[in-house]
Structure formats: structure tokens, C-alpha cells
Amino acid sequence: MRKGAFIVFEGIDGSGKSSCMDEVASALLRERIKVIKTSEPTKGEIGAILRTSGNRTPEAEALLFTADRAVHTCEIVKWVESGKTVLCDRYYASTIAYQSASLNGRSADADWLTAINDEVIIEPDMTLLFDIDPELSMGRVESRGRRSRFERPEYLREVRNNYLRIAKLRNFKVIDASRPKEEVLEDVLRRVREITG
Image (tube, rainbow, N blue to C red; front, side, top):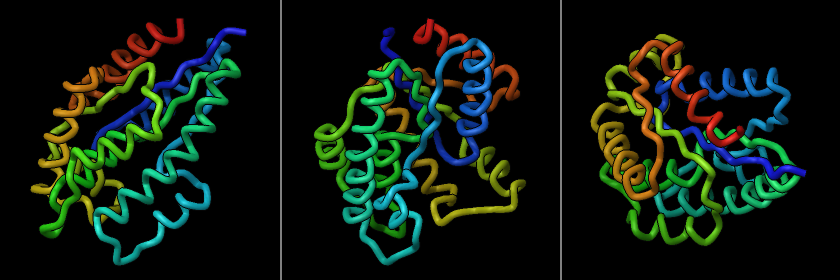
């Protein structure tokens, strides 16, 4: 049996990564490729804790995300080994990018975040970073009528810079997500097909 693939979609909220991932999944299914869509935080026990609001330090939150990821990674390995293409909305780069940015004057150390995640992850076959100016991404989020505590321009600018730094270190494919969604999808599908054959 042909081994599958593991492809991650990263970016700040409003970058279009989630909707693009859905479109990519549909396109691959039409091509008879077995696809699993997943995301972080997961819908599992630890992911459920992360989805509740709480007075957590950046370090505590990072440890919860990493614990959730450790369980999730075991599932991803099984799926890939069974020949499926796994598309994941967020993975380790999200924790490093977000938790090392200063929110309300608090942040976790980027080197520590990288070290704890490196203990539990597998490196994806491809990570696509949907890069976009935070002002534009926030406009998209506001048009959907929802906003989270993370969506503050100065904070998201720091998150974006963190993402770009990680992308350079880890050889992510950086996608210009400010383009029309049809152009973005075409670009992403071309890159994904290099992996899925």
C-alpha cells in the first residue's frame, strides 16, 4: 500500500487557510485520493479544555496545546501509514507563533516552545503558510461577525513575524493569501499535488 502524506495549513485567523483546506480536500477526493481533514486544537479530551476560557498563563496554555498535539500526532502517523492524505488546520508552528507573541504583556519563550514541541511532533511533508497583512485578515474575520481575544493588530503583527521566521527555518511554502481565493487555491493545489502525485 502506498504511504499517505501529511500536509499542514498555517496562518493567522482570516488568512483563508481553513476554507482553502476544505477546497483542497474536495479536489483530492474527486481524484480518488483518500483524505482525512483534522485540526488543532482537536476535539479530544485535551482539545476540549483548550476550547474553554480560563485564566491560564502562556506557558500553561502552550503545555496544553503540546499535550493535545502529542495525542494527535499518534493518530496522524496511523492515518498516513494506512495510505491516507492528512490535511491539518494548524500544527506546532501555531503554538510557537502565537504563544511567543506578547499578549497583554505576557509571552512564552520561543526556544522553549520549539523544544517541547520537537519532542512530540513529526515534520509534515509540507507546511503551507498563508501569509497576509493582519489588517486585511481582521477585516475578513469581522465580516464573519466574530472575533477572538487574539485578534488585535499589534499582536497579530508579531504573530505574523513569528510565522515568517519559523517558515524560513523550517522550509514552509509561503502563500500570498491576500490574492483572490481562486488564485490562492490554484497555487495551493499545484503544490499539494507535488506531494500527493
